[in-house]
Image (cartoon, rainbow, N blue to C red; front, top):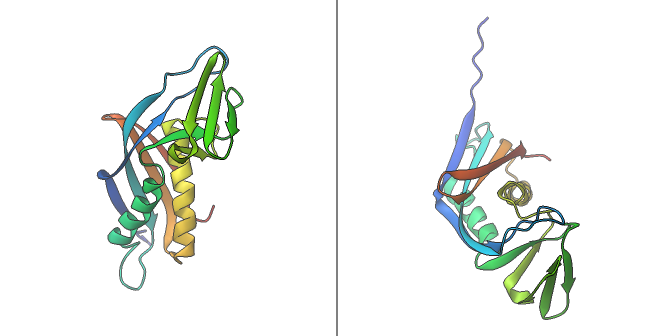
Length: 167
């Protein structure tokens, strides 16, 4: 018997979603990419089965969910919480960052410390995927089986993360 398996995907492309943020990437004791600003673009793909309305997930709800998450990062400096090459000191109003002989001090309101080891596109994609998965579970989106998040740093240069919805 030839049984056909259907797969459905909902995609919100990177043209719609984005955020501007500063970051730098450390490469151990010997190296660190200089602090710079990027206009990140984000794409999201949800794979799953159809609900009673014949939807995997509503496009507008997905866009709203992602815009909410991205607004937390927009116009901020992104710093990794668990990078062994960086020393972060957070006081009430400032965040100080040290890498080797470099020292930066930023207003705390301009900084988002992410629970990742480095602010690479790969780890930002994973962070956003995990946050989105939690939002989808809270919303009761039980038709979704897999998520994929793309983070594009510059046109043609993207990183992807994918994982199960029920991680």
